Image (cartoon, rainbow, N blue to C red; front, side, top):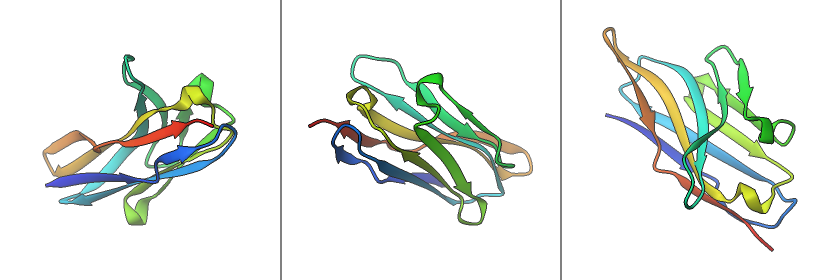
Length: 120
């Protein structure tokens, strides 16, 4: 009953930029922390960045200064602005959100993933 839909992935050259979006929809009472994770082939899924409902952000060390996470609470949407992209940023990027759907039920939801490929 809750969906997270990512968009904005694609192919970009090294040094380029991309903006990912993730919109939550469905039976939503409130949304807590939202985040972006990525998984490269043969590697474990790792945190890229997260943002609380109040706007407090957290970044993986390798992304600090290159990526910016933001959110629009009115639209239930989280964004990831990526710049100075490197080939090692190539991965499937997943959106994640802690969503309360009723007074007694809160769960973590995942999007389906969007491919980001950095290559010349």
